[in-house]
Amino acid sequence: MSIMIYVPRDSAALALDADAVAQAIRAEAARRNIDVKLVRNGSRGMLWLEPLVEVQTAKGRLAYGPVSPEDVVALFDANFQNGGKHALGLGLTEELTYLKRQERLTFARVGITDPLSLDDYLAHDGYQGLRNALTMQAADIVQLVTESGLRGRGGAAFPTGIKWKTVLNAAAAQKYIVCNADEGDSGTFADRMLMEGDPYVLIEGMTIAALAVGATQGYIYVRSEYPHSISVLNEAIAVARAAGYLGSNILNLGKSFELEVRKAAGAYVCGEETALLESLEGKRGIVRAKPPLPAIAGLFGKPTVINNVISLASVPIILAKGAAFYKDYGMGRSRGTLPFQLAGNIKQGGLIEMAFGITLRELLYDFGGGSASGRPIKAVQVGGPLGTYLPESQWDTPLDYEAYTALWAVLGHGGIVVHDDSADLARLARYAMKFCAIESCGKCTPCRIGATRGVEVMDKIIAGQDTPAQIELLRDLCDTMLNGSMCAMGGMTPYPVLSALNHFPKDFGLVNK
Image (tube, rainbow, N blue to C red):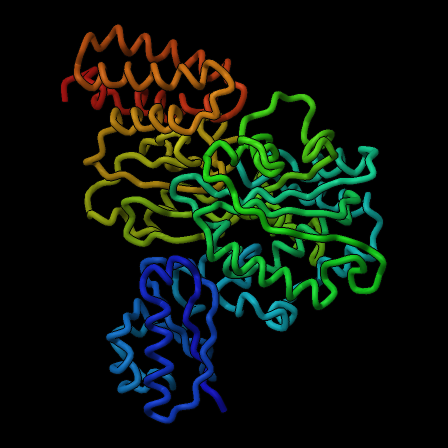
């Protein structure tokens, strides 16, 4: 009987020589006449341990990592294929504290299954949600998603069910489902991990969305820097179509839904839903004025559901296990789970899926193990490059949409970037202005001109030129951008700038250093 050995095919693992590790395992097994079946799984999300090699044993899967190609011979010498002890041995994967404490719903299969094996997906509860949806009326599907409390897992956190209901009630011969997979926020990788590690759950979620609103065509708009995601999705779509889960007659029940992958334009602003639609239509990614909302007049002017990857991938479990099951996780109006992504100056960076309500301090220390440098953590940016810098006094606030709004902060896509006490927050704030100046679509004046002037003002502050007057000017400029920009690109640029200024005044020369 073949020995099952798992080596991730996730981009993070590939960047750390996972392909070479897999090749070395095959070669060494062949040299020793050991019958090995090598499975290329997704990543478990413990990125400091990649490539993480797992071996199936009678007791469960045993983990070894991080493994380099040079370690393979010694691993075989230690009989690792049968659970032998080695310095890289970590024990049972499921018992690792980082994983064991998590509440994985959306990422339940990621790192466990072969991402492209439909049999694997079905064996791990895949397509149960779609089968249930096929027996329901469209309005009942929408109602179930509404009752679950699922909200958009992007910036605005808009209730998914309300968006779907608007599209359902819109009269049109053609409707669309669009997945925003243009994951461009700093420190975020959840979308990529899911697309590469469990593509069928996204396909299933989009298919359920189509049944719910009467759409027959869907598009996944994938970040251009994610070639592996694009490849995996295209292959999974072909397999799903061949098996009857997509196409003109889904599971022979007369429902139709087609799905295509589109490579994004490489612009940060195309993560904004209306700029995305412009790009998807083959035009320059420029923000549209609203109204009309995309739910009324979206792609090609037709009613369109736009959700991001995690939102759509959370739908199958709601249809499979019910709204109450999903709603049981979380707090307040923030229901379910969010895959938090730890990055930056952190010892144990990776993905942590937990229910809303966990605190930043718990993520930083119980999971992340503190800073990678060993120095005290000074500031944590949550919610992407335009997210707020949170000082230690705010790290015990529950990670909840409303609680963070009260802090003038955002959860966004769950990206968390850590900075130790060597960071200069004035220079980081300047970066936010510079980023906006580069990435602005240019349509509205507050964003286009405001960010450019913002960089100039920041340079004067950093140089110590008439600091009080320049800071007053900076605050006035932020007020204009916050209230006058058409979209969150310019409207959120003040968040990192003002939070840095308010919480770290020493870095701006306002008090003696």
